[in-house]
Length: 200
Image (cartoon, rainbow, N blue to C red):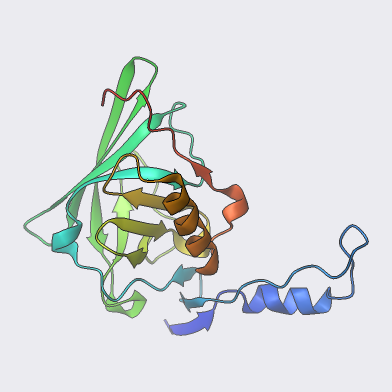
């Protein structure tokens, strides 16, 4: 299988160029898409992971403070707990709160081939889930500072903004969401995660 690095939005940019003369609500051409580095393996596009990602410093608890909405039993107070396994994979424990109940699921994040990035790219699998649609990673750490982590999935479909703090400043969250947009996420679909009145 042949791999190559591409700009994710090359196909979108082409479409935008073809439709550049088509006005949106009568005011002018549609805005151009932001082209960002990505890897294409013949099946899917994958964001480029942060070369500074360090799995040892990534372990511990991360609170989801924003992201693409998911169907998690109307959950709030979502967080993930990561721990390194002896074989190099990562134990993933996702927990959230719905009403008076807590929900938790444990899975495994397995590092993928370095053709997708030297580090920070994993295939995450939970019990009972169907295999991923794409052969490469479905959990890519796009940007990582130690206090915040931007995580995307293949084809840039699902964003997770994670924070070491449960309640970072709203302006900081907003800035990270904008950062995600610069890295290829559709931020029109991103919402902030409710982290209030949590008991989990």
